[in-house]
Length: 122
Length: 280
Image 1 (cartoon, chains in turn blue, orange):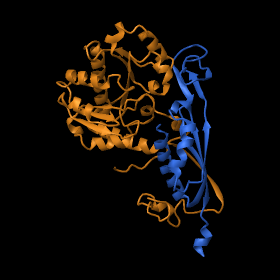
Image 2 (image 1 turned 180 degrees about the horizontal axis):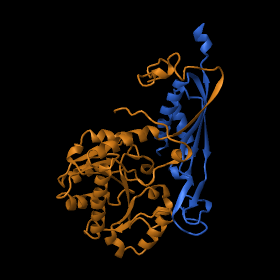
Image 3 (image 1 turned 60 degrees about the vertical axis):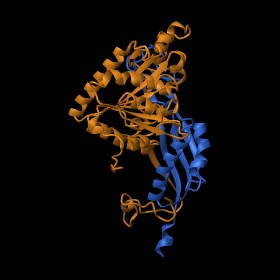
Image 4 (image 1 turned 90 degrees about the horizontal axis):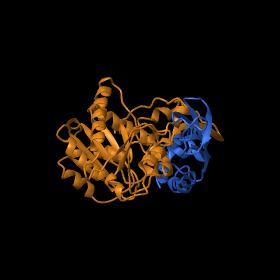
């Protein structure tokens, strides 16, 4: 269960971005997670309210896009969708493959409301 | 630190929000901010800092990962005995509780720093950074980091090591690489340990264990050894000596090495933005 500490690290970044953008609230936080990142989307969602409590993202929605495992063979060049424990080429069987997708652990987007600058100026 | 009183506005970021700063123009209403940053960038930043320290002092850092009880500490004891005349070694031990493993290592005559994580199931770069404050890297050649015994979480945290070594003891089952692909995919070397027990365990097939690793598109070496009975240690010791020589050659060229697999989704999707380095 390392998802809570990953959520806490995410909140450091979210808070930085909120500050830089004068956010008054955060509506949503979007992530991309691949199965080979070692992070479980469901556990991340469960940990999020604990990490976000008493922060600007307290009421934010955590949106997680789960990405597939896709590999490309260095030998025959073919691409295949596969599972985390079968990363050899599904066409020629060679294990010299490159991972195109599947190990992502990305913060992709934050939707926020900016504090009203007009009010400060008048 | 909070987001209401402004106490987290630092010297590092205040220029951004001052009038005229590039983030000072705010709109009303909702705004969508595109980020594309690795969730672990906070940890990875400290990990790079640790790695820079190791490189600066010509130290090779090796992270040992496995399930609990697969023989990491026993392997280190046997390794220190063989290497300590030639190399200067220190060990960072990670466990939830107790100083037991560090005490075992100290009996071999080398410094050991015990990190007790409380309830955390893994070491992270911050914990290793704190431990490094208690080691004199200038007087060392190798730092072994014995991670918390766990085949899941440690694989996701870069500590600043150069190489990952994953142990699989023959008492565990030869399908472990298939069950824990994230962990075994991160290995730069897989060690099958406690092989003295193979004669009484008819259900562990070393060939199958290696085949299951290859299914993860891994071409790293696999060695079999028994630290307790001093069998098969030569391949491991030779590999370490070779890796140390390569580390010295890298440092001379001003290069560094990250473990074979770290989540690299950010690099694939987005060019990394330069990141100002702060001394920690």
